[in-house]
Image (cartoon, rainbow, N blue to C red; front, side):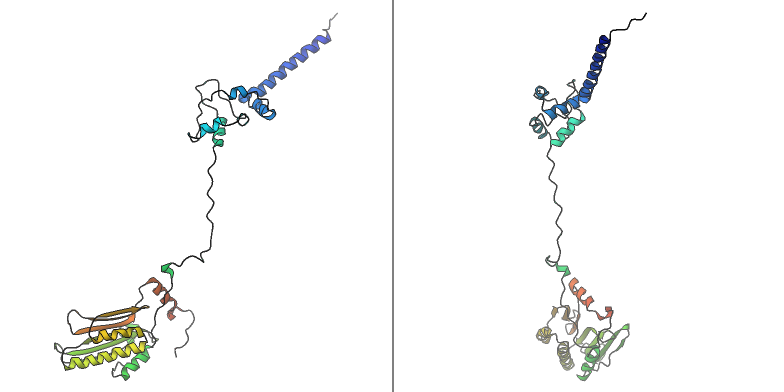
Length: 306
């Protein structure tokens, strides 16, 4: 004969065990991870369960924030704002866990990001000196015509022909000497005109020796006539201001728009003089402009000269 336990007593034991087990599970869920879930529940429903603990003095915190700003920001934080952070462990010698460190670091105001530089067009930029263009002079007469005009004036320079320097250089020249070689009183005159095979001039040089005698004075007249003719043919009228200094046998140098005139006395002989007339582009902008208008660099043939 078996005796069954009372049904009411067995039910009571079951419910007590269920409540105990459920309480343990809930306590574990709320108290695990430094009561993170309980703090979240407190923050959600404003139960103020941790109001007393929030007033306790804060323990030392090791953070990477600025030491002058982090403590002030922590003291001014509300309980609801730090409810989700981890509490300090029971041992006062240990430091706060990583979530608390992140919370304090996040409280620091991030630095304002610099706006990216605005892109603008360079059309309205002020001009840069090395990039400016420049006016440059060119010869207003061709080599063939100048040689012909010199021949008509009495200087038998001959025709425009290839130079002994090479096939890329053409020239015409004339030389006259009065007196024997080695004679200190001998007078002489030499002129040479050089340029390209197409007739574009490069430079003109004159060398003259004018001793103080009749031959020297005659050579001097020839020299002055040649200089006047050259300055007239080139049509560089501002260079004609040098005629007065040349007539007085004074050194003079004029430069304008990439052209240069130089008249100077040789240091070895005070009666020997040189005159140089030509194009001389030194500035970068002058060189750049000269390259642009150099017919030899053009891809299309230039129109024939009139």
